[in-house]
Picture (spheres, rainbow, N blue to C red):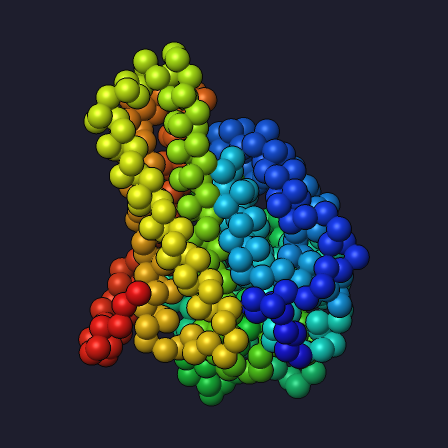
Length: 402
């Protein structure tokens, strides 16, 4: 089953839940996330209240086609909502964006029977999806797996040990990468959907990180049996799914969330600097303050421009996402957003000083945003993408830029 409109710029008509604008839904959820963000960060607790608000808002079905009760949204909608949610709570934004990545994959590639069973539940907010792609010994490399899937024809046996499963304790379903049944090589990766009730899912590690504390990205062991029609894209068929949907949706969602967090931090500084007491505290009338603020804004605008360029390129009908120039920009978006957004918040802390920027109880919350964004370059490590882009640059001898 291939559903049009999931990653297309041609959005289908709004469904029955489409009367409320997506922006209003996002703003309402962001308010809930803001109320709980500090406590969730302090305790490294999953943002249950924000997830409940997301379930009730219809946004869990943003990328589910209207025919299944979803909102039939686009990658541009994904980026806009992720940015809004990230302003008060980057953890909530990334949890939701990664769920949407999984939902888009199911909408685009699941067999019809599975899609008809599962997509209406996702659209109704009943299923929060977690991704299981990491593996001991190979990290987050998407296109290989060393955990073989066993099949007797009608049923598949899944056993997976994953060092990182974002939100796994609270997920209602999982998309799991597995090695296709023997004698397939590790490069023959199969994507499998499993409902939580079909698995024994247990936490196998703790979670006490520097930042992104509310994501609860714990180690998990998953085992169970699922029907054979829960393979997505066929045995060994994950690579084209990853290239066309999984990676683009992931990089766009991440970049938008990181940009939203940095932009939210900048809004706080601008609001402070516009008040008389804040203007004096920040020395906002000085050229040095204005110059630094301008450079921060330039960096965020650069990320925003690249984000919009990549979205337009990926959503263009007939786009060749595997083309070298497209891959360069897609990988470059993840690297640039992770580095420039973190750098911008680091400079905001310098601008705001010890009391305004560095203290944990500052109303600007720059310290939390700094810790959260420090993880961005580690989230599917930039070095891996830079190696790929270096090779692609050598292949693009005409150096087509812009």
